[in-house]
Length: 215
Image 1 (tube, rainbow, N blue to C red):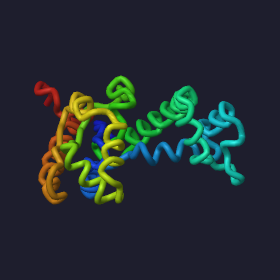
Image 2: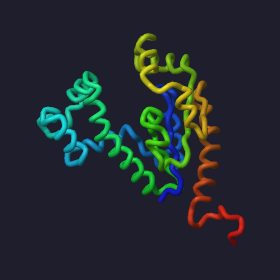
Image 3: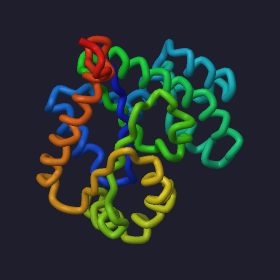
Image 4: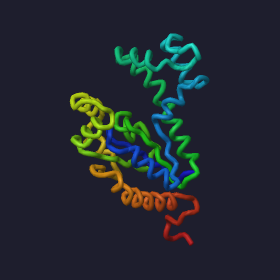
């Protein structure tokens, strides 16, 4: 049962996956918002039933699963439809992430939320104890996107511009990792954060000694 929940966020191609892999290697449970977003619309889930009620059975594939491509086309053509979809899925995703983190076997857990700033930050996720932002200069994001996804510079720029600004993300940060070099340089930073979070989780535990007057 985790005593501390860390929200991890960052812009596209900032290095979120590099960080989560290192925390997982240390035995830390990571709940991924992208995974939760897929799971909450699986057949039998209340969110999928609500989507069908709002958008009609045409959003389903013959096997009963959500036709993501068809739904995506509809919501991007209609901002009101997008807001309706988000009103259904976002609460379900948040609840799933919180439940996974609170039930995690590690002393602290991480909720990896790429669009945390866009989803309301601390207001949208009041159960986060701390927020860790991984940051990279936009020039580095551009280069990584072009190399990783094979996109041109113009598309890379549009992908970055579609997200919250660096300033908006940095304003959320309790902890910051600047990832502007080789992935190997993250090892020491993750080790330092792991020690800090483990200590905070111990202090938050009912068995911890956060109160200096306790025996």
